[in-house]
Image (cartoon, rainbow, N blue to C red):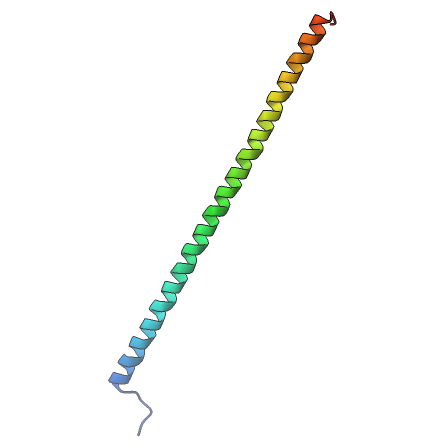
Length: 81
């Protein structure tokens, strides 16, 4: 007997390998989709965080302007500068 495989055995092994490869690719695609979703969530969180920081600095600048205006009015009323 020789160690060579028959055509039927080769077809069976190839079919089994193709099925295994398809399952592995499906798992990889599912992991990629999960990874992409997690990345989008993180990017959205960062954008939201950056928006909050911009709002806080805008509010601070606006409050500084209001306080400066009030001080100017008080100084003018009290007869200074």
